[in-house]
Every structure is written in structure tokens, then in C-alpha cells.
Length: 180
Ligand code: ADP
Ligand code: MG
Image (cartoon, rainbow, N blue to C red):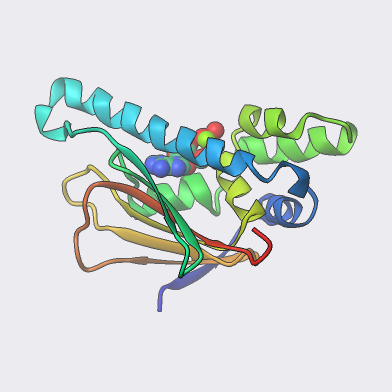
């Protein structure tokens, strides 16, 4: 059992919005998650310029599993440490989150897919199609442990460091909702 932590208020609001209001744009989740995977590979490639050990046969894989109703988006990019998962995904206020909510509030006819990209809240669009999202990630940093993060859309998420090192990079596991 991992540590259970609560999202900042804005993140909870954002999650609620993704799950309950923005459903007409569901398909953008894939664009956002693949964009994140590509960003992670860009960062790793940059590290590879000064340390060839960081280089890989760069790849983003998308794996559907019909039996288990999951979709995995897998990259071999930079990965995240536990602190980075907390900072990038969870507790710390992401500046974009507040601005995104404000913009949406003020302008109900906003182009939502456009806004999601613009305000850097793309990861959460996963919750438009998934009722549970897991992240398995291994940072490129030498001493970093692999991390599992999991959230079922409630304002809490669970996180733990894993004993076993994993292949470097990030695996996003979407447990698809029944209607998706
Ligand atoms: P943005 O991409 O605009 O920063 P997102 O909500 O899409 O906003 O992602 C938030 C952050 O989470 C990213 O900036 C990055 O630091 C981290 N992140 C998301 N997906 C990955 C991934 N596949 N590999 C590494 N880091 C990731
Ligand atoms: Mg993104």
C-alpha cells in the first residue's frame, strides 16, 4: 500500500471537470499523452548529447488490451523521480491549472482542446476516458527508484516507490471507462 495524498484544490476541480463536463472532446487525451511521451523523449535525447549512455532506440508504443480494457502509452524518455511525479502531476499548484479553470469559467464557448494544450493540463485529459489511471515511471537519474502512481479520479492519489528498477521511461495505463 502506497502513500495516499490529496490533490491541491485546483487539481481536484480540474479532475472533476475532465470527468463530468468536457466529454465532447474525449479523443484529445491521446494527442496529449503522446505529446507528453514525445516531450519526455526530447528531454532524454538532450541528455544523450552529452552522455551517450542515455541514448536509446527512441520509441512511443500504444498498447490496447481488450480483455483488460486498458490502453497503455509507453515511452522510453526521461522518466520521473518520486519528487517529480509529485511536482508535475499532483500536489504542487500547477500555474496552468488555475488559469485554465478561469478561462473556461469566463468564456464558456472556449475551444477546449486548444485550451488544454495551451495551459499545460494535458495529462488530466486521461480522465475523460479512464476511470483509473496508473503511471509507472523510471527516471534516467542513476539512483532513482521506479515509481507507481495511481488515481481513480477522486481527489486522492496513491504513490509508492518500487523495489525493482524498471526500463527507463514512463508507462501510462488507462483503465478505460465502460462507455469508452
Ligand atoms: P505540459 O505537458 O504542458 O507540461 P501536462 O499536464 O501534459 O502539461 O504534463 C505535466 C507534466 O508531467 C509535464 O510537464 C512533465 O513534466 C510530466 N510528464 C507527463 N507525462 C510524462 C512522461 N510521459 N514522461 C515524463 N514526464 C511526463
Ligand atoms: Mg503535455
